[in-house]
Amino acid sequence: MALSRRAFTLGAVATAGLTAYGLTINPPPAAAATYTGYLKTYFTESPNQSGANYGLHLAVSRDGLNWTPLNQNNPVVTPTAGDLGLRDPFIHRKQDGTFVVVATDLYGLNFGRNSQYLHVYDSTNLTSFTGYRRIQMHTYANVHTWAPTVFWDAGRGQYAIVYSANTTTDLFLVNYTSDFRTVSAPQTYFSPGFPVLDADIHVEGGVTYMYYKNLANGYLYGARSNTGAPNSFTTYTSGLRQGNAIEGAHLVRRNDGAGWWLWGDSFSPVNNDFYLWSTGNLGANAWSVLSQRDYTPPLNSKHGSIVCITEAEYNAAVTRWGTPNWVRLKSSNFPDYFVRHANRTVRIDPYPFEPYRDQLWRMVPGLADATGVSFESVSVPGSFLRHSGYVARLDPNDNTATFRADATFYRVAGLADGSWSSFRSYNFPTYYLRHAGYVLRIDPLSSSSSAGDRQDATFRITS
Image (cartoon, rainbow, N blue to C red; front, side):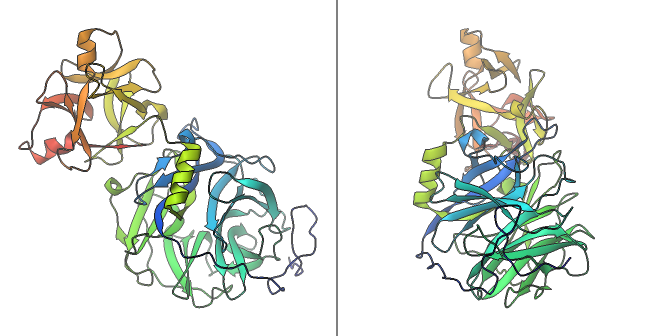
């Protein structure tokens, strides 16, 4: 269906506005900033949807790899119009240094529900998200508007909003905007002859790079253009894939100047895996797979985006929203496994699982010695991880001296990796918490123990 070159606005009926080639006043570029952290946006799902929430979630990271959810992993805002939920939230730093978030207008798993709109929020410094609105991207019937990405098109002097649609096939459309309120008519941006999904776009060294999913074979690819104009991209990488299924390609420029990361995530709520590659040269077809030991996504997080932030922005977001009052314990040698309780047994299992809250622990001062630590279950308050007959279990605190001693550990440098942690028993000082046959227990260990035993006793404290 041909559309006139008119602008679409917030209402169901479009009104006149700026076109792609309209007269605009370009915003001044933001002053050069030093980025010391990262902020991630996402929504959440879990296998039986007990952890599903379709509001805007935030997490922060110092290294860009291991993430701390903010606001107790609850949303900071939730849409109040359209489908009353969002997916695929994309955050973009605008030319003036402030932020805009655009997101799919969809609640839950009803992918047959098609919206012509995107949700939009503004943020000055990540402490609030205001100006909520929806923008109408097209007037097609029964066509979705999914997984938006944003980049600044310097040649046009406008922002490009690129998103997945299914007009003649699964392809990318683009609308241009100066204010994220009025947008140009949609144009086909990328339709390479096979169906595609989930674009992410960055401009680097005068080249516009786009990563996407080829729906025909299930792999991620990179394409590039010297102009960033619609229909100007050429694919330059071989296919990338980890796991059984992957989508949600997302590029991140590293703050340390060492190159780029490429994230991808699974698209099933029963599989919360994220996958990661790195490269020192975005223009080369040379991506290296990172081990899941190297990174930890936010709990239950799904398809989102990452933006580099300053120290002031990092501190402001943490101060405003707060960090979790719980931790998770990640296994060193089974890095997709987390410590959880099940029927009072304490063990490691691959995440995701339900109830997902059984992996959440409050790490409190040791019950027998406040310089140590004890682990109280979040899902069974008043019950603690303790050893009994050398085997770890979850029991209610009876406040006896024996219980307090069994439930107290000293956190020390990881026996297999000093940047991780190991936990030495309070009342058996040469014994450490470790897994064996996936069940936690305490055993005598030291730096001279076998590499495998030391790995079994090493954990990352994460959230």
